[in-house]
Image (cartoon, rainbow over all chains, first blue to last red):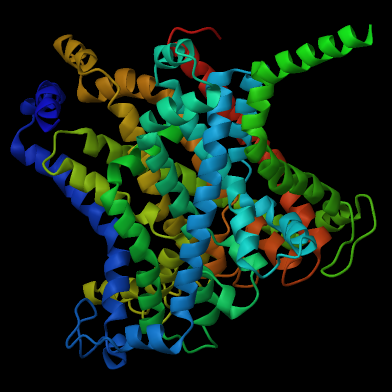
Length: 299
Length: 310
């Protein structure tokens, strides 16, 4: 695998180098490396600031005259301990995990069938259904949350995890379906035709032929959907009232910010720990992530 | 007679059950149920709520256009509309320029390219609310690290009041939004850049084209379709942004940074005026439709460029 990849990649990189040999090194530094360094610095600085604040003792936090704000002398775990043992933070983390996993699986399951039906069964009107799915993806949560709050209340699931598990698929299903449609399109028809000739049913074709081939697409869609539900805020803010049912973003913002005295240390520790799960997941699946992001745009 | 009829019906039923329409409908069922229940129905309900005086805990009655009439005379609402338009406009332009620049840099032959690509996406991966909290601390009125650095450099004398003064607050939230949006634009455009054949650039430079000409007459036209789509998405998400404002300013100081989404939330949920909140949300729809149409024509052009039919 790696050998073929390399041999494939070799001419590509040669090609990509193109005419860049025409640029002398000093010019490359000014035109490429300097702007890149500035971009990377600006894009990453808030995370550094988050991390360094999370381990700074309170005495250094606002004392810029005696301590350099960019560094920390004698890092402390007090903020993190406070967060983990004296607030409901672990509960919020658990809620977020449960809600994101359930919403992702629900959406993925529904999307696989929908995408297969639209792309391969080609029932009458499948094209317009595909277009409607795309339009559904463009409906933003910020115009849906008020009516959804009314509906959630009527269903009697207000202030429970179910409220979020059932509403997150509204933006996950269109996205996953759209992405999987692209993947299914790339699987050759001949495979299905030969399975049909061998007497397989639609169900068998889907489970035995299509799904194994669509695994990368499903990983992409799943990871992206998980991240989207982890990041979701407005529904969680609106539909959840009690502290023990909150998700991390809502909990950190509404429960850790009290009055006028901000506990910046624990606040930043909360932000850091809330980001870590998605960042770790992302670091393992960067390529899937990128492909799902660009895939959604390209189609 | 009846026998044959039932047999006929049976076979009709069977052929329907075997038809693609039936199987397709069956496969579509779970997604359709979800989307009808939690997307289409609420969309309709939202439009209906906009015409009622519903409050939390009380079903409203139809009051016609009263909500919209009230909004038309509401200076806070118009402030929110103009904020939203300016916020979207400035943030999108900045995201586009900086994102395209970053994409062009990443498209060069760099060491550790995939590593850079991976870390540049981080702002987009991390939950907006949590990175907005970091920005809140960076924008702190007293202990802002930006103010401190600028004072150390001798450029300013007193800390900048980032979020306390209307125009500063607007600029600050736009900066935070751009920070979060650059990676999406850059990585998507990078994917588009990588599909442009190098041979075009080589041919052009043999003909004596300058780098600017190569960018202007090769890169930009080849990239236009994907720019259209990416920017439509970007505009759409910026226009309906809620999280950043809610964390950084909650619409303050004195409603100066309210966007339509945050105003809709404030009136609808803490304020309890569901009808009015829904009306504000519905007022966003025309803008969204305009963006979607723009995207639609962007896609059309893409097809045409690939040699397909219009």
